[in-house]
Length: 108
Length: 119
Image (cartoon, rainbow over all chains, first blue to last red; front, side, top):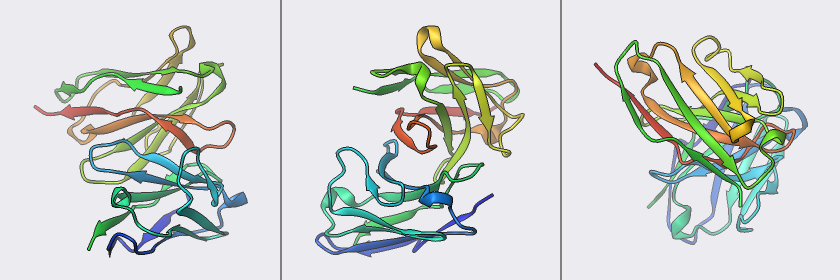
């Protein structure tokens, strides 16, 4: 089973700042089959990024994903008030499908 | 518009059985895997299993194999998650998800079904 470790656990930033979230895999994720989701309190998660770097439909271009192998990054170029949420990575390169533990982006 | 609409919240006692549902609409229901994801209170996301409505093929996470059953009824475009004997530790929010094509990430999510198991 591939274990995904997200860091930091919490990121305290101000609106307008850049956010960099890390997702590290215990073994290589094949074909960069890595997705990112955003979850706001009381809501279901929403797909942001798939294939490590492809934005899902309707996702603003301030969200970008990068990485390959075991190291992946989600970057939010300029935080908007609605971006403060918890972010999860998920690998789908091998079974079982696994999620990281999440990074909370909070208002500083 | 793709929608995944789940059944309402449930309160059950330990040992009882339960089946929750998820109706897909706005797309060809038989052509996409449907999955289930657990979120325990204050915790992260865990993949449980998936079902292919076209032929009812199923796959499970080892953590949930034998603990739950996933199924689908293509005649009513509805997927199900069921337990035969609930435990207090099954208390969680359960999300149904549509799997995107032939790559197992989740492009649409249901609103969630809260299951509370308490004596």
